[in-house]
Image 1: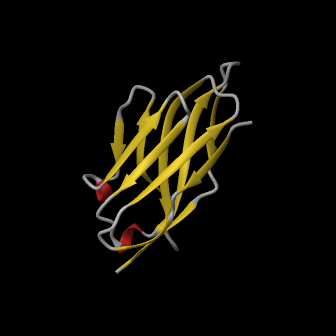
Image 2: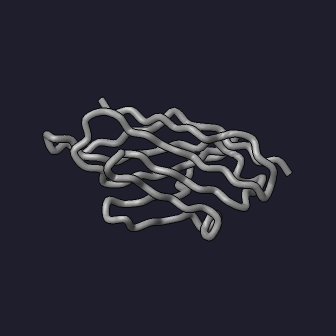
Amino acid sequence: QVRLVESGGGLVQAGGSLRLSCAASGSIFNINAMGWYRQAPGKQRELVAEITSGGSTNYADSVKGRFTISRDNAKNTGNLEMNSLKPEDTAVYYCNLRYSTYSRRYLEVWGQGTLVTVSS
């Protein structure tokens, strides 16, 4: 069973930076895509950024130019560098992994979430 462990959340002032990390453990044949989502109080979960197996990236318009997603294929880890943070970035951030197993099953797993709070 694949598990994701996130780290790096916390409290930061507006304009500051944080780096979120996501580490996958378990039996993974291939990572198809890794993404970061967030959910603010009273709002739906939304995609922040994702990176495919080929290295293509996709960002929400609200974070373009400020956030950078990266991935280490060999270590099955991923990072989200967040710069110029704004109070509206405050949310619980979740790592998401879409992967295939050695038996060619395509599965999806979520991390437990890490809280990012940006003070004004």
